[in-house]
Image 1 (cartoon, rainbow, N blue to C red):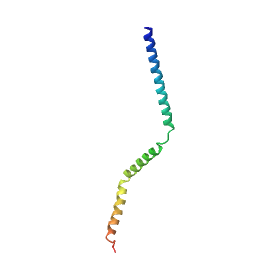
Image 2: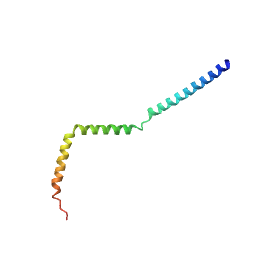
Image 3: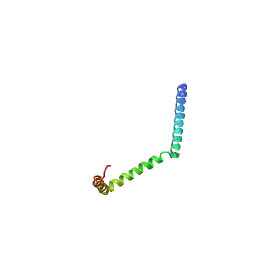
Image 4: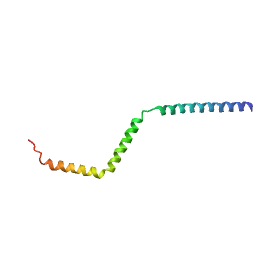
Length: 84
C-alpha cells in the first residue's frame, strides 16, 4: 500500500511540475505578446479602411453626383478629339 501511495505521489508531483512549467511558458508568451508592437501597422490600416468605407457610405450620393458630372464632361468632350 505504501509503495502504491509513493507511486501516486510521484505521479501527482510530476503532473504538478509539468503544469507549473506550462504555466510559466504561457506567462512568458503573454509578456512577449504584450510588448510586441509588430501588429500595430495592420490595426492602423484596418481602421483607416473602415473610416474610408464609412465616409464613402455617408457621402455616397454626393460622390455619385460628382462622378456623373465628370463622366458627362468627359463623354461630351470625347467627340471633339481629333486624330492626326
